[in-house]
Image (cartoon, rainbow over all chains, first blue to last red; front, side, top):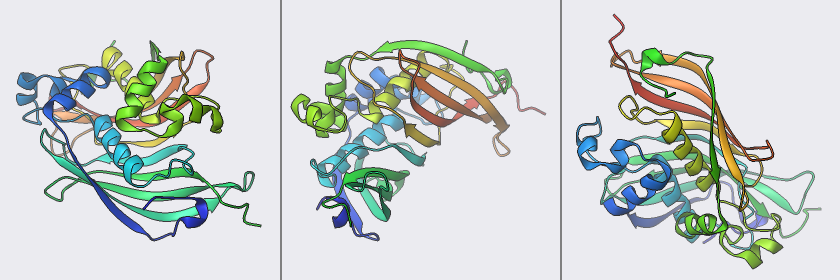
Length: 151
Length: 151
């Protein structure tokens, strides 16, 4: 099951997939490169933080969710990238050993007026951990190719 | 210059910093892990895409911008993470060899009613390339410790 081409996307479809377990080493590795705040990279400092231990960078969580989308939903041929995402929220921390899955829904789609061989898919994605807590949510926007110009 | 504690943040302050040059290898390495779409990881496929060549994952651009914030603005002691960001936009692609810098402005701040020893800083960040094009913009939300409870 992939997003597929513009014509293939059925608004209202809800998809659920993924099982990504994140290790402490991966959390520290990502954050060392892109978000080296103490509660992401330093176990002692993290214990003394309000989080009580190492937590994943929110950008790492977004990256892991993106990987699940690419592996399970976005079609290599149809996908054309994204102009941006809205209302990105990190609800509760992602901790070492957590297993993430994605639930995403297609909410709307719109063919491009100027480039009718492509269109935009509007969605809403939630990322859950193994306890069924929502750890992240976001309104997604993705551009895809169309099979025809719709005329 | 750092964000500092809640009391230190002056609404209206505009900061500019950073000089991060991104290599093709780093673009491919990030995307291989977190966003393996063809136009991020495959030179031949990228040439045939609308982008005409390898471009950085938007999440990689966000990560590089976050690193610039952590290195230049966010205080290790005062910073308490973020509940989310709004209206994340990738305006034009980031390509191998591009050099990124950040311009960010503090737009509002609000002490927590329930936890007065902390507060939230609302900002707006633009990421520019070496040609002074805006490659990414986002409304930022950050939580910081306060020096006192404000009473």
